[in-house]
Length: 185
Image (cartoon, rainbow, N blue to C red; front, top):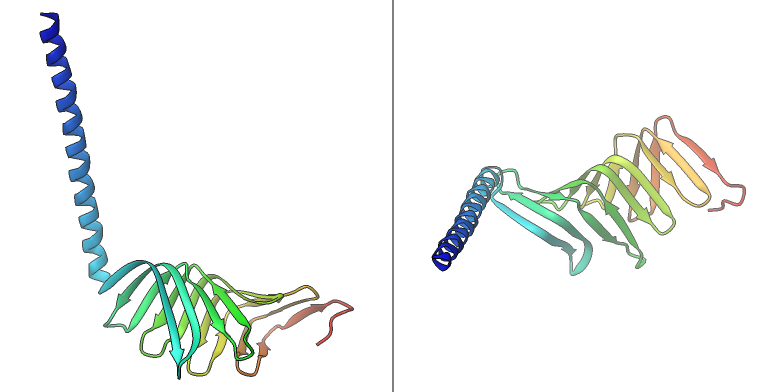
């Protein structure tokens, strides 16, 4: 009799565990399905852990790595979460940009970075909330406040533009700067 009760209790426990597992899996699949349906409505393609490279005339101009991307053909853009972009300069040096979000225009390869944007080159770092990169001109621009800091320098302005080809940085509006005594160009 005791063995029968143990068998029944064991059977009930096993059946209960199986039911819990089935309910969990079914609920998980329906949640994943609804997430996928809402994602499909806003994007033609969605990808996790993505890399994109822009090449012109056989020369690599930049590479982008991101946590995820959504591609929309209608708007001709790809929206990247947590992008990290490396720009390759003519002198062999690199320029790095990170942001919370980035949008690449698929027809021009121009990039709009938004949210805690950092642009770093060797010992200098530019910080802003929004930065645009025009791929055809190889030029950055920001129409929101920016700050540039380095070992011996700190500059801030209401707007800026940076030409990669000529390595010239232009500031506009309310420009302020602090230079170390040992600073030299």
